[in-house]
Length: 155
Image (cartoon, rainbow, N blue to C red; front, side, top):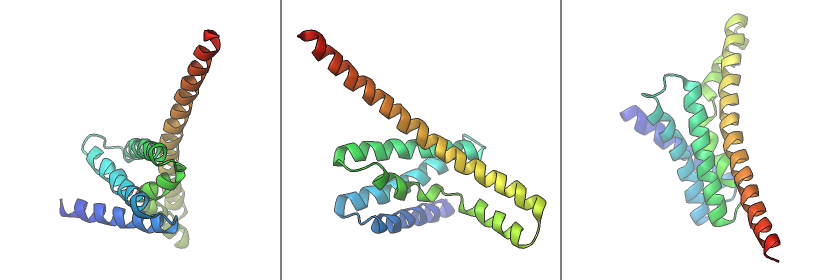
């Protein structure tokens, strides 16, 4: 439990740092920072349900993309301004560290295995983001087209 609290605090602080880099102010700074807390909280809550780290990354990145899309619409801000700081806790830094460590020590079989795992995690993060973003754009397009279609037929 204590370790999870420390992880949540560091996830929040990491997102805060990236929010500052994005020059967020007031409520946007808070929302982007809380996004990092939310993304890692989802990841931790999924741990007992999904032993696969990749699936937890997929679901967490999907959840945080929905979060970013909602607040981007509410605050009329690009989605990336909330998504990037919020996704920072999910970046597979530990896996990347081990990959580089194996490479530096010329442990090539371990390096390749670790690199493949790192790429797998990054791929699952990307798929979660792409799936949600694409779904929202399709739904928005359908909504706009149906409104346009109904207006066109009323004439």
